[in-house]
Image 1 (cartoon, one colour):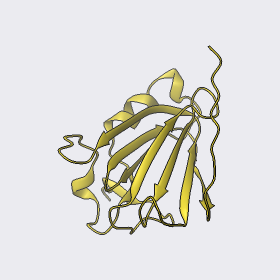
Image 2 (cartoon, one colour; image 1 turned 120 degrees about the vertical axis):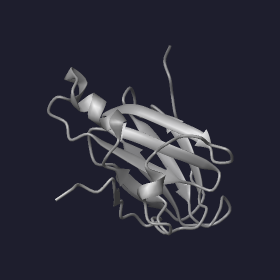
Image 3 (spheres, helix red, strand yellow; image 1 turned 90 degrees about the horizontal axis):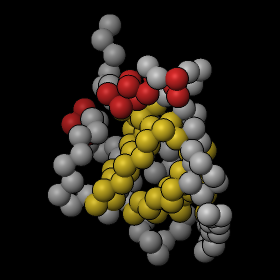
Image 4 (tube, helix red, strand yellow; image 1 turned 90 degrees about the vertical axis):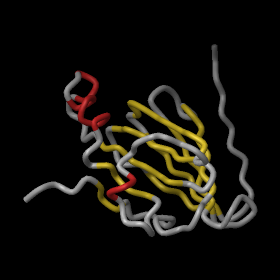
Length: 141
């Protein structure tokens, strides 16, 4: 049986229409990424924080005019969150020392303002935010 090019990523926002999606790189140190997803728009709650660890690659592009190929033509039309199973990016990392002993997957969110993809070696966690919350990110350089 042939493997599907994409798998629906079951999240609270999988079927949202044009959610706002933002990205914070390395909020919890090297190899981490944080997405915020606002399914109802920036002024509406709930919102969701999606935390990724063992991050190997991140892309974020403005959705208008984006030419990124992320397997979206194989995804059901009503789905904005999926795993790109046929990703050449995750396949490339699997063949390196960075991918050793990790289950590398390529997660994609098709937002109404940004399209974000994350190649990582662990399952992301999703936290619900029901009211305004401040996030602090600190860097030492």
